[in-house]
Length: 210
Image 1 (cartoon, rainbow, N blue to C red):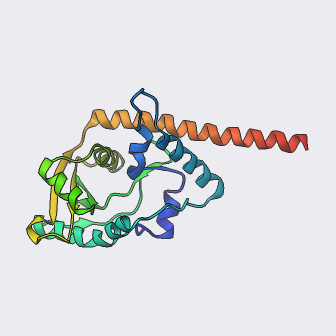
Image 2 (cartoon, rainbow, N blue to C red):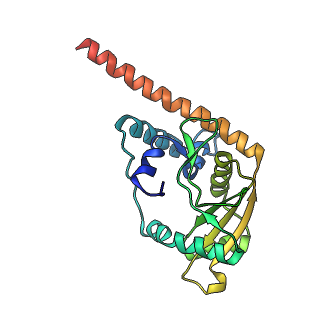
């Protein structure tokens, strides 16, 4: 399936995806979970009960990123002389209602994750030669779902001089991080199931009373 298509949206409906796995594990300074986790749980509940993906706000920056992604993929393929196979939604091998949509598969062992951020963010990642932690979690979840050994994280900006447009950092599979993410995702999905069961019970009791 093609990413962004109706088929793709339905395939990931109500499921934990790599792009949101950081929200599943997000915590505040006091140690509790953040509001973003609760908001994501609410989204999955609504999607499952309505059968429709929730519409999210798309900024100009996000639109630019989507438009720029094919160019970034082609630039990566050319610079590193590799073939990139596009893929739709890949289900987690053991956890129902979870999966990932990598920006590409490379050979037998690699996945590709592309970001096309604002120019300073692009430069900042390059200068630090580091990938933000939320993106690391996303990449690790993609490897968990695909069984791949490494992920090439790419930041791309076509607005800057050509030799500065692409930054790459290879992230190797981290079994311990993946294990922790899987534990969190399983618990999170159980909470989502519990919320749906509670709603069913609440409305069932109301119907009985009427």
